[in-house]
Length: 251
Image 1 (cartoon, rainbow, N blue to C red):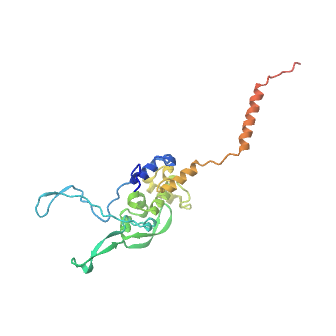
Image 2 (cartoon, one colour):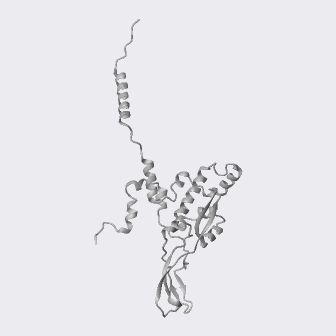
Image 3 (tube, rainbow, N blue to C red):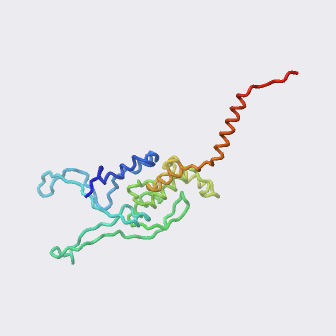
């Protein structure tokens, strides 16, 4: 087994400290920090100790999160933090029988969701829990803008958030072009979510997309050699002209 200078688990963190990764915007690098999502499939106890219901004695308890697998297709929809859970079940619900492996999957639906900011209807794969979250947030736009990245857990959701924030930052007149009053009402309604355009452009980008964007920003077209030679020749002629004595004719 090969030995490594650094543990494999911290390779991704070390990669961000060298090369083009160090030139990425600080607000984007901060967004890459891993945060714990809000539990969906289990409920945290919120305490370290509690009384035993039978004996009444104080005993220590701990929160044990359920391991959840998020398949690639979850990135193309809005699953509300739900995923696949693997476990076992008893055959015919008999505890004396053999345990069988089972995977619980959320029920998926195709639903049309309308965005006021983008003025467009999107057909998105969602779960029943996602629809409840949209209702609790009082609208699709509010749900996308209020929900943090770790709870959305969706590339589609972050792309929609970036598009919404860019439109809010730019005050795009293409939104309701024939109804400026309605446009101003929409912008005022979501004014609390406005961020600078420079930050909104990077929101939700994957690391590969961010590196490519940074590379394009730093890319410069090669300057033809003859232009440099012409500029150098003009500069030398100017210096030579200034060095020559100035002669005046006598009348």
